Length: 243
Image (cartoon, rainbow, N blue to C red):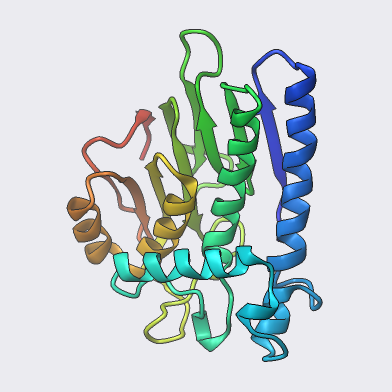
């Protein structure tokens, strides 16, 4: 999927947990083979070229497209799995795959884990007994500086922005790059959702992102505008906040 995944497991490495880690890694390779837009032989790439349909694909493809349609409805079309008119569910797949990998570990008995998919994280339990996880969020306009530190237990954290890949998120209504924001970080319980919503809020821009966040109290957001202004929702789980 054009990015790096990592696992941080704070539980005792039992045989079951070791087996689950191998299963989770195999799962991510399977997702890459099916959904990567960087691979011309993936099912998603072949669908985008019109060579196959959903019925010709593994069942995960139909699942992901259904989740994409739900995210599009929840964001009034600001999330799209056809940005620029081309099939690309990457804005949801990475979070979905990471969350599923985290679930594989949990089902094997690993209760305190962090699965990191390209900077988007599914956190479970604690980093140490009595200690919440701490996640640094890079400042999109000040290389080498942290914008804030997110703290929490059983938390998902996703960031969309320009720091790593420039203006790569498209406004689905115009097909042009979204230019109004520098970064959006969204937190919630499930990375499948927060990854998609971070992308959608970035595409929306400042005022609509504020309105959406106020209307969806299950999620919290931290936004940096292209001009460098910073705002966050009332319950955003930050340990420190640096402008």
